[in-house]
Length: 62
Image 1: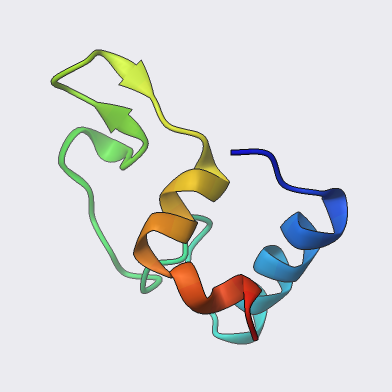
Image 2: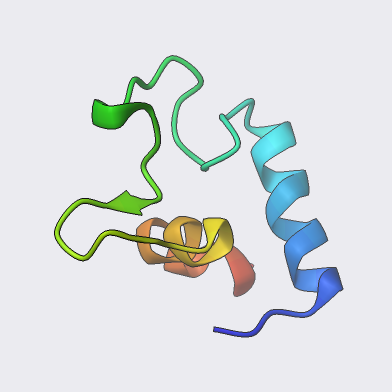
């Protein structure tokens, strides 16, 4: 997934406005393993913005 810098800024502004954590989840969210970007099955890391848009696909359309 390739996002422009403007799209990334829009996502980060939404996170700040809604007082979410850096992954777009409620601020008090706790993750198994400490990080939602690590896929234990594949051993790979997801891009932070890809993770956010999988959970919130409508954020760029507003």
